[in-house]
Length: 333
Ligand code: PMV
Image (cartoon, rainbow, N blue to C red; front, side, top):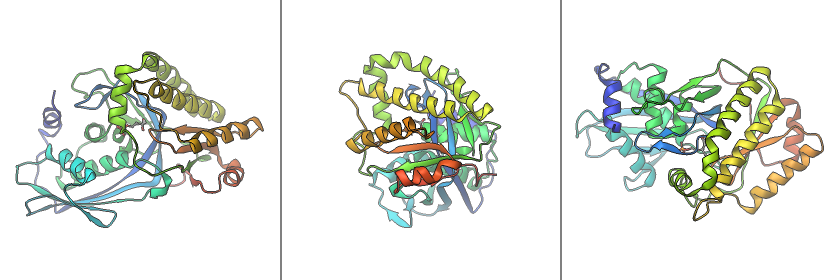
């Protein structure tokens, strides 16, 4: 099934008169159990399920309107972006599948509330905010499950950014992906804290789409990834239910390291870590050995995301003075 057919299946009964503009905000998210590997690249259908936590006020704000022009006009963080830009090309290609005629053009104003120096990916919140804004502009009135599917087609992890709090994206089993949807878990954890430890903002040596493809094709270790995820999802869900921080931290850290192990074992190898990343890992382990309940997770990049609880915030800030601390549950409704 193509993206177009999938979108047609969702929007078939939702064609209404568009509004003047559509505006939306979506939070970024960090996976505690990672999505790594696709079983279908066209629709971004994952090999495994995954589970994340949303970052409350850190995310993307997007406003959309229709314009009478020969091409889309894109503003990113207050600056006009040329259509030749990689970001503009990805956005325009995504919007192509939603255009009602080949002449329909959009004005897109998108602002990330994530400090660039936090080193957090913005594609998840970016595509989620875009889909939410499209829904408002085009007056579709879609439910969250369908919005999650549309966001997933933009970027897999965006399926989780439709919601706040803990979110599980179920891999689903259908070929059309209609059951590969994220859902919010009915749980909160007010004392949970995340800190981003920034190592580098330079563009990644390889994007996550290509890295996933290479991992699936060439890593022998990838064979063990689905069973690792199945076990970790049970443990993370249990940790959230019981508010067992050590279990949450242990499992999330181990899951992230296992994902990186599959990448390191590709041919040619993919190693996102820089010397500073490894130094910070050792620092976390040393602090933990001294009794501080502190864990980390990492995505497809060199930056660390620390996991800890509110009562240890001062100790973490002292050890990582340049880190950005986020309280995911203090700002979500
Ligand atoms: O959604 P993508 O294609 O940017 O992939 C995200 C991959 C990871 O961030 C490494 C893991 C995840 O589950 O978010």
